[in-house]
Image (cartoon, rainbow, N blue to C red):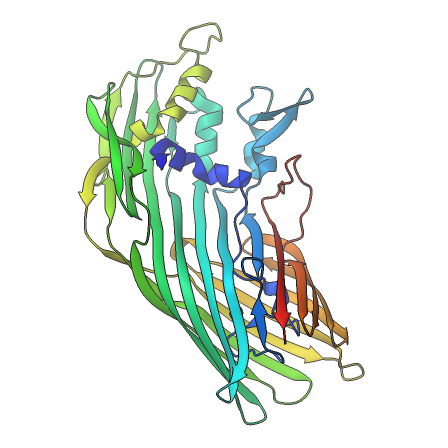
Length: 454
């Protein structure tokens, strides 16, 4: 595995070109007969036992963000080009937030089963999970687009986080009297990889003959067999981290987590529920650190700029070189393995309320608030929808969501009969797509699965 730091710095933009995977489909929270509803609240139990079809029991594909492909790629004279094309006016920056978000999660179910026993409903599942999140400052795009139009650029708070892990989850839900149902799950976490890259500062002052920089950055990487590659920056004669490689693979840490949930039904029309998911930690075996060691200042004439398009040091060409050498600009030093470290999982809080229409109780209305707690990457959304169960084997739902990532329309269809369960839904319905099928807004999801109820 070769992952170069300059690629990592731009990977937040590259996320737009790949699908990520969502941990849970919130559009299914109130859907009766949705087999994996216990993953949204461990207090929920199914009417039937079930076993998932391996690898296809619960598949999610999703991506989310406040910046999309439509902000990066443009059509110029019938050709697709990036915002760096001179024909694309710098006014596109007006549509970019001061700090943009891109992210996604992963939950690939290898195996899952549910059964009635011990005076309740029990679940066993083996999943692979992960997430990627990034914060991208607007000044990065300004720097790449405008060059010497501004003499100074402060590229701060450019962060990237990703981790991947497996989990073995054991859950149980139990009815307490006529109105309460409680549930919980214990999870054994198998750590795969974790990277936290925080490019806190890059204050650049550009001149035609020289430029100076004040940088502050740190990368903490917990990957089995990982080592940093280094080079000499000829412009400053400093050694810096230029990439990373791992000559091993396998588990790299262990941890534990719990899910907790409760549901209260004061009468046959109302239901109120709450769940706290993935409250836990992972202890990683190593922590490979690359850092500037605080603020680092230097001046170099490695790049000289000219506004003459025919000059060998035309600003457009020089800026392209600088972008290619972003890792050299930060000049991270290899600090080696700092020993084990512990990180918290991204916990999720779900709070829901559902009301059944008295004149037709098969039609229900639900309001769900979901908040993901993950430091600088924390996000929240409210989802209001209607669900109908016209006949017992069929459940349908539609909803509107608003939150950190803007507005979205979600839906879910679920068929559940003895021996066969199929569900299909989206938390964010895909809008306009590229030729490759990617959503231009960077928000979209697809969730499907096939299970065997009995």
